[in-house]
Amino acid sequence: MKKLLVGLLAVLFAVVPAIADEFPQTIPPVNTPPQVYMLHSAYDICANNDGVGAQPNGFDLQLDGCIGLPAEWRYEEYAFTGENLKYEILVRDCNGAQDVSYAKITVDGYVEALCTQIAAPTVSLAGQVPALCGGVAPANTFSTTYDKVYSCVLTVEPSWYGPKSVNIQAYDQTNTAATQGIAQSWYFNPAVIIDVDTNDGADHIWYELPAGQTVVFPGQTTMSGNKLVVTNLAEGGVDLWAFIAATDLTDPDHSGARCPVSNVMEAETALDYRCKIGTFEQDTWTDMSNKVNTAACSATSCYAAKPLLAGGVLNMKQSIIGNQQSAECQFRLTIPTECTGSFTQGKLQVIVKAV
Image (tube, rainbow, N blue to C red; front, side, top):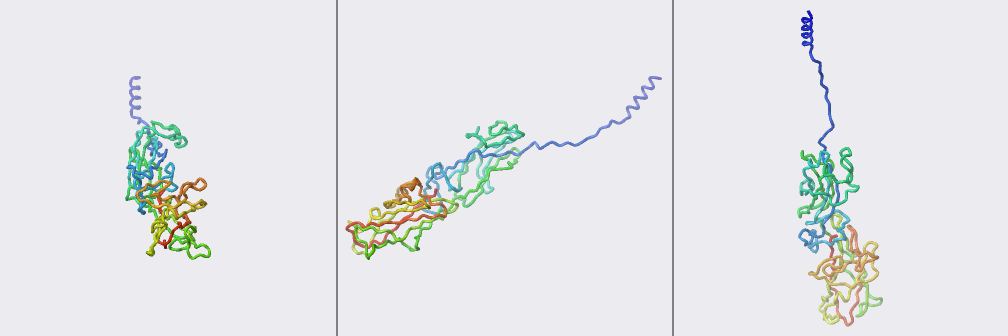
């Protein structure tokens, strides 16, 4: 009887169905996009990779390069053909450094340069990279677990012109882009343009006659009655170094001129100038020079022309005309002794170089 009861219970238990249920669960995303941080930027300006100078557009004397300030500073973001924009970036990926695939530079959305991975940062990360990935990726410290560092170099091409957006972007193995890139606005290959006029609208520089005289006598000195005005109209916010020179003066009237030993009045002997840029105005006069096409250009001389503020003013040695700003120059003429003729033919020459 007991055996039968046990067998019956076994049958009853066997036919009772098992009870089970399912319930959904979710976890946070694991594939997070990389993050990009600028570590350092540098600009190779006023000289291209061949060392022969950048080539700004729009002005023939500009073709052999610009004149750089110390540390290659510029006050606006513009660049000419052959100049380099250089960046060092850190890419941090919470999925691990092995998930970082590549970084690139785009110009107006077009891929122009791929970045090169380097072993480690060459500059301090202090204050540049926050703690990420739940705090496991350290702040301001390079982590081989989460980080890769890239060097990105963009060389300006001759076909690029006008305002452009330069963007540095990083991607992971799924080709997911960083949620934030590094974007900058640049003006490429701006035209260098100047306007040269006088402050009274005259089409030439004229000189005052001494009181009661109808001519200037040899040995006398007279000032220009008007001033030369040079205005920087360059595109893209370009600032301009400015220099001045003059041709010798000649007599177009065939009157048999002599001054003092030939028929030419030498500008380097007879002419002086002083200029004003903004609040920087020279009190002293500077001897004029002749332009020499084969001479080199620097901050102190360009084709033998002299800076507008030759010698500097209040320790301001840069003769730079700001964008959309003007400079004024006045002239002093000293007639050599033993000089006769009508020396009405001559030119003042203004030479500018992009900063």
